[in-house]
Length: 256
Ligand SMILES: C[S@@+](CC[C@H](N)C(=O)[O-])C[C@H]1O[C@@H](n2cnc3c(N)ncnc32)[C@H](O)[C@@H]1O
Image (cartoon, rainbow, N blue to C red; front, side, top):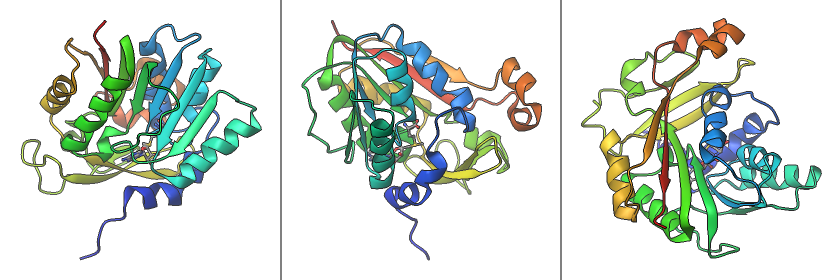
């Protein structure tokens, strides 16, 4: 049997399809604007972006007035793209490093006002996710906010394997697929699909991992889906997803 490609290989091979300066991917419409909204006031703040990819979200944050962004990603190609964009756009306050979020320890500062992980945890096991959350908790300033998004854990079991977004769960069920990798695809509006994967977790695992990492307050949880605005804007693209929960956004505060 063929070994599955490593996540680094997948992202190194498709980095050019991720590079963008405007909304292109489905989740650029359905999730990333909600991350920005959930962060609240970020002017003048230092933000940590785990699994930053080619830097699309960090550039959104800089546009919104943050003081600095530090991004970490395990794909060398994604980091090269992020650095090239930052230098082309003269974004002196965007810094990026190649590294595994689970083990990375070369942070430029000991504390950040806020942290994000936009679709990182779907590449990690529950144990790895807990380690990253523990690291985030240690790096957040008192009262700092952590916002992360993941594919909705029920989506693989609700939707057929059809565009513009799906994961293959094979014969695994919601309860017995824990820590199993489901391969998937998400589409860009121009018809190009990109490969994604989801190490399956149940809803409860996110709450348990946050508590183990030291986050003592209840997270805010939002189940994200296509909206009436999306459907009016491009019914052909967004229409097949009407009524399905696509992603989950968690927002949690570190202790004051
Ligand atoms: C779906 S992309 C999202 C990128 C970016 N956050 C965004 O929203 O545009 C997931 C990213 O997580 C990165 N990634 C996966 N596993 C990782 C790990 N263990 N450590 C750091 N980055 C990782 C991938 O290389 C990829 O760039």
